[in-house]
Image (cartoon, rainbow, N blue to C red; front, top):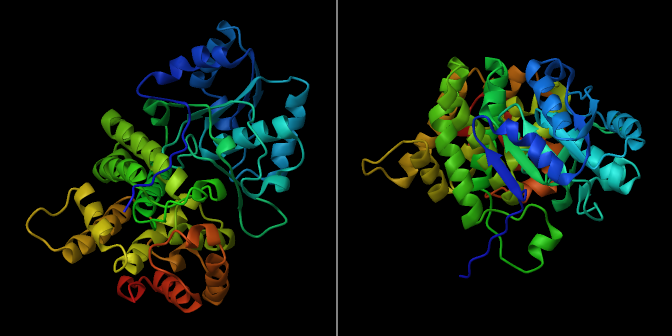
Length: 408
């Protein structure tokens, strides 16, 4: 067997307490005019005012678009871009949660290549480099600061859609855990659970043959030894600190662990991809209007149970990363312990445990299953194959709260 791996990451990642203060210097190296994409809440904070003042002091003129909405409605990107055209920015800075970072990526795309967002839906549709993006996350979950994906909501489509291209990767990611200190417990939980789902799905994703064409034809190429290192680190950090950060938002060490966990999970899934938990969330989330991180986390224990037989060694290593085992337990016992611990953590941070609890109607289970199975870029990553019957059983199990049924 020959080794194969691929990684696509920003050319610079800065992580640590106070790293936000590097933004002016980093931006000044990229140009003299910056479009900032953020939301109204963060734009009203003293921290944001300090960042803008620092940019101005460094000789960087700023245009602030502070109306980013959750899930990035398609047409709001066009509004942002039209406002910015006459300003002619040299770079785009996204500051905020995943939607703010995705807005920055989309704005940079349209400012660079024109057209409309639907022109770029799918994989490898972006024709070349975009304006450089600096990503400054203020939540710890999506990993968008390091991934090649932007997700938006399109009013002409039921499901959210993605634009996937290496050209969308931010030039620089600045990750300062102090920026997450104001996140309320509910947001901390949902974002962190999203990150843990990213890490576990990336680590248990299928491994593909290393053809030289693979990474040129697919943005997500399955797990490898390189993505595994990032995923296992994320699982370790989130497993030990997500619950602590949820219970005490002032715990700086826990906040740092969770933000590093979200970052490294993004480094893993940005190449390896995610799988069935994300596939089910797209239609389930569209019907229930629940946050993405909540939906994927609700699904994760059931997907782990379904995949257990096809990814037993990986599940056992997930248990080790979570700090479990070590007493001569079998792989089967370790895998069961990993599923139980993920379920316990999610219960502790109040993640809804069933699709029924999310509000999914019983008469929509067939449609949810059909739509989920059709998301090929995710289903192809799942370590255990899915067909219409097995997907329907998985969705029913997650609706009923039956982990045993999910394993069938």
